[in-house]
Structures are given as structure tokens and as C-alpha cells.
Length: 168
Image (cartoon, rainbow, N blue to C red; front, side, top):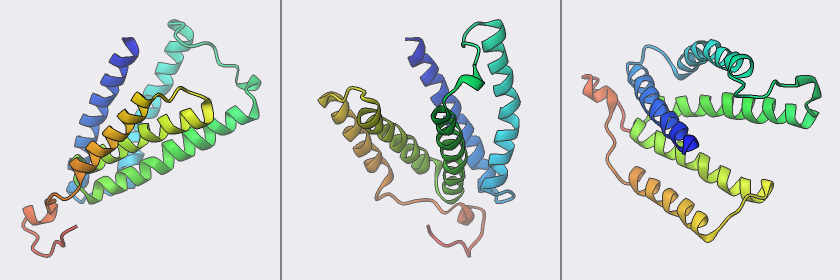
């Protein structure tokens, strides 16, 4: 139950955070890379403080033995988690958010991610893939497809009086 509550809290935080980000990007005064730079700059001190507290005060996380990590684990953290998920994914997501509605972009990105993780977890990590899990992934992807396709999209600049705004 603790994991579910943490996941729901993360989803709520991301939902509110992306709404705030989209409202700033909508103004056109900054671009997606500036938004990512601000997000990362603000998040890093909090993350390092949380890490320190978890390791040293709360015994929530084992003391890391960085020098003992296999090179393959370091590569996974640096390349997969850092560059791919932490860098490239954020650049793509924020760029998409600057171009379209948060109600379209967020469900697409945040459904493709768990579907990819479920399939790759099954294929590469040997995690269970029951017919129920496969059906759930298919239903979730189908739901997002229904949510995000064939609906009129608002033109954010037209609302601000910009008659030159092109439809997306």
C-alpha cells in the first residue's frame, strides 16, 4: 500500500507540476530547455538532501558502495536513467508540452512509459506478464488513444489575440 500511495503522490505532483510548466511555456517568454534547466536546478538540492537523509538519518536506503558497483550498473544509471530518462526524455516531453495541450501530451508520455516498462520488464528482466497485465496495458494505451485523437485542439495564441497563429 505504501508503494501505491507514493506512486499516486508522484502522479499528483507531476500533474500539478506539468500544469504549471505548461502555463509558463504557453506565455512564450521562455522555451522548454529553460524550463528543464529551472526544474533541474531546483530539484537537485532537494534530491541530494533527501538522499543524505535517507542514507544517514532514516536508514531508508543502504549506504551506497559506489566503488563496488559493477561497470554495467554505473552505465545503466548514467546512460539509461541519467541521459535517456533524465535528459533526452525531459527535452522531448517539455518540447512537446510547449507545442500542444497538457491534456494530450501528459497522457501520451505517461502511458507509453509504463507500457514500455511493462513489456521490457517482461522481456529483459523476467517479470511476470499475465494475460491480465497484457490486457491492462492494451486497454490503457487504447484509452489514451481515445483521449488524445480526433478532437479539436485549442490554438493558444489565438486566445491571446494573435490572428497569425497557425493551427497545430
